[in-house]
Image 1 (tube, rainbow, N blue to C red):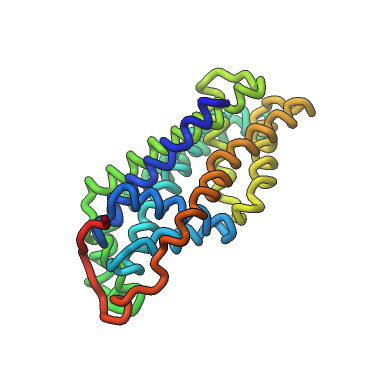
Image 2 (cartoon, rainbow, N blue to C red):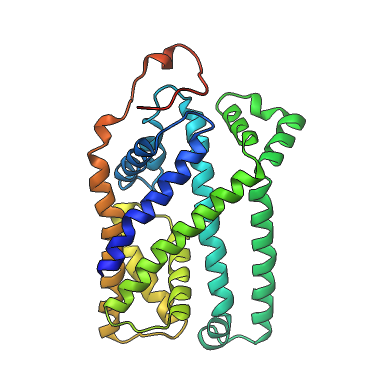
Length: 293
């Protein structure tokens, strides 16, 4: 359990580095301020549906950079994290496709091949769209000029990211994803849910996939996480006895406390540093600024 706790700062450090890189197109932010922004965003997001408050917590750390541009940069990072969760979840679906199709759904084996083919097609399309975000935005802007409209025009920021930038962001998202997935796996072991690392990580991938696609508020997410964890283990025929249910719920609850509740408490200390009103907000748009001290 101690190892799972030790991975928490690594998890959020990676997220801070990712956000610092993305927000650099709007305003240069030091790593220290990026960490504070990420924790502040977590504190605010815990009370909002699907953690949308995360954007507010982060962009209010900016000194002079355009906050709507900052929101777009933050969205880009969150999309990368979401894409990683969907891709890794689909890998887990592939891995457990036999158990799901044959044992749980009791369908014909032909559906295994259909499911795997759909996974390849969907994953390929998602990756293609993400890596071509700048090109897609540029083409839409040229053909329809919708990005000249108020608010929507801020999505022009996406054209400033190169494909290599998006690959870097996706890589950081993957490393972070594997970090908190390993936390979950270590907690399962700590509660005597003995799985080899491949089976265990694949189950964790499925659980995070389910948590991601179910809308929730972070403060109420704990119960949803527990239900999804039990459902996933039943789905693939793993540990359905009552004793294991208690251990599974305990594992997912402690992970929530480590990765959501505790960081939110830390973030509460940084909320007072947020700049909700700035002088330059009344002086027009601004772009790149000097690094924060």
